Amino acid sequence: MQRLSIYRAILLIAGLSGCAMAPPAPEPVPAVPEPQPVPAVVVPQGTAKELFKAGVDALQHGDGQKAKPLLQQVLVLEPSHKHAATLLPQIDADPVEMLGKENFPYKVQPGDTLSLIAKRFLGDPFKFYILARYNGLAVSDNLEAGRMLKIPGKKPPPAKTVAVEQPPSPEVSGLRLPEAKALYANGQFADAISALEQIRSEKGASAEVDDFAVTVYSAYAKKLTDSGQPSEANKLLSKAVPLYPANERLKKQLENMGVNRNAEQSYQEGNQYLNDGELGKAYAAYEKTLKLAPEHAGAQMALLKIKPQVVEAYYADAVRARRRQNYSEALGYLDKLLEIDPNHELAKANRQEIKAILDRERSAPRR
Image 1: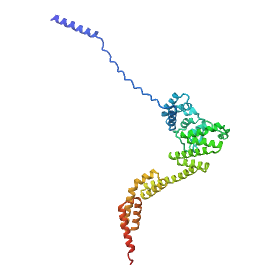
Image 2: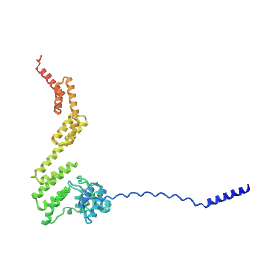
Image 3: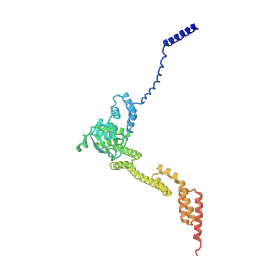
Image 4: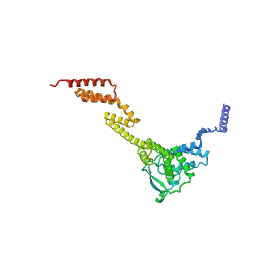
């Protein structure tokens, strides 16, 4: 029994020493995070000319981030592209640091664009974007006349506002018309007009220059009208017509401006009548709009929408007038209805009946 106890003690000591000598359990290895996918770099595709045009268009719409990779790729394809090199820093630069704190006010004139103003005061039309940021503007092709801008630098003395240039050589003059045509093709109508007026002042009128100038004035007026600036378009044409008094195209366009203005006024009157619940007057105003401007989409849609209501209202008015035995009034409503819907069978039947009643009354002997 004693031997057994000693044996157990030996086993216990061996077990304890074995535990002490066992190697420690390895620490868990931390999980390695999955590598983040590297976003693919999309390189704009196209020629330097195409990419530059797209970049300028993006800047003209105030989208510098869209323009940035386009202009960067232009410089990759054509490192000496000076206009891209001019525009690219304007996207991220501080406008005040680039142009300076000193500035003077300038009132935008009809036909002005930011590129034209930048060319006039900063010496480079491609500084239009930094000039827009300097003024807190989202760049667009057109500026509203009368808006006040801050122009960096000192205001030019009055004597220097009108530059007196030496008459250009024939070679320089010969390049001016193609330059104006290039501006026109690029949608820079105000710049093209400025170039053409300079040509006329230097060399006098010519059939080729005058014909092209009329085209530019006409296209610019249409663009202003389509962009919701009919008053500016009217001012532009009012300026152009005296310059080219023999041109019927400009006169007709100016006349149409007046017609369209009257059509728009009539359309707005129709909308007001509609809001007031006067459907008959609204319908008549929309019809007048279409007589002045047959392609007026708003008036066309309005007429289609309210026609069933107007027909129903005229018919109800005619029925009420007939019940009061006011037959002349009932006929008036039915006639208006049939002008709108000549195939309205109930209106035609009622009109015949009322006419028969009136004929009997007229033919009955008076007592």
